[in-house]
Amino acid sequence: MNKRLSFVKAAFKRCQVECWLSISALADTLRPLQTISGPPTELAVFEPHELRMMIEAADLWLKTAIMLAINTGIGNSDVGRVKWGHFVKKMIGDKTETRFILPRGKTGGRR
Image (cartoon, rainbow, N blue to C red):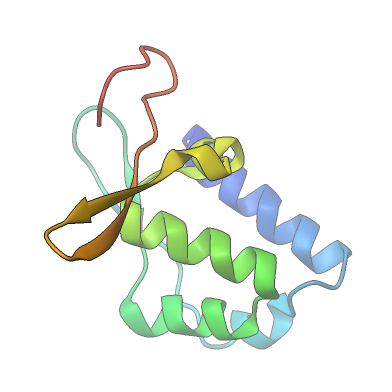
């Protein structure tokens, strides 16, 4: 099992222990994770309805973390590093747009 999958498993276990999320309620409806082989690591793939179920069952903080990860494609450790300064407002014409800018963890380069 790769590191990311182990981290997700540990996170769900912690949620169950702290009673933040009812894992038993999800267990009957979630199928085992499908993995896609390919360089550089294997990726865990959730179906859209499974993601919706996790979002609906999560508290506000966890819901925010899940939505951020889904919409930006960042991983677990990156979600933990997010600060308000990573959200940058920019004027485009007469509209204000907010962008999420988080440098890569190891290299600090752009994503």
